[in-house]
Image 1 (tube, rainbow, N blue to C red):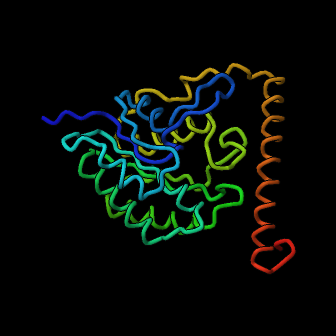
Image 2 (spheres, one colour; image 1 turned 90 degrees about the vertical axis):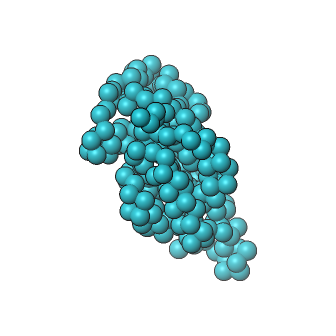
Length: 240
C-alpha cells in the first residue's frame, strides 16, 4: 500500500505565501489553506520570483524521487507573463513537464489559470498563457482552477499581483470546490477558520484608505513606465 504524503505545491510567491496581516489574519499560501481544508499534510516547494522554467529546474529535483502525494498543486506563469521576453512555447514545455511530474506522483493534480487583470502595467500575455495552461491540464489529466476573473480590493494587493490574506483564503475556497466536485472529501472550509479583528466601520475605513494610497502609488509608477516606453519607442505622447 502506497503511503501518500498529503499536498505538494509548486510555483512562485503566490503559492509560497507570506506577507503582512490583513485584519489580524495571517497571509498563508492558498495551497496550505487547501491542505488544511482537506486535513492533509503539506509540502511547499514554491519559491518567490519563480517562473515555469525555475519550477522545472529547481523545484522538481527537490522532491524525493520515491515520494507520493494525495494532491499536487501547480500555479505558475505569473512571473512569465509579466516579463518582456515571454515565450509561449517555452512556457508550454515547462508547464507540461511540471504537470507530468506531478501526475506521476500524485493521485490528483490541480493547476490554475492566471487572473486577466494582472499587474500594473497589466501583463500582456495572460490570454496566451491561459490557453497553454488549459491545454497542458487536459493532456496531463489535471483539474483546472479558473482564476481568470479573480480580483477585488480586499482579495488582491495594490500591485494587482499578490493575493491578500483574504485572497489566499478565497483561492483555497475555489480550489476546494473543484476538488470536492471531483470526489475529494473536504473536512473544513478555510473561511470558517479565520476571525478578522477589525471588522468595524473604522477598521474597514482604515483599510480602504491604506489600499487607496498604495494603489495610487502603483498606478503612478505604471503610468510613468508606459510613458517612458512610448518615448523610447519614438512614438511620443501618451498611449490612446
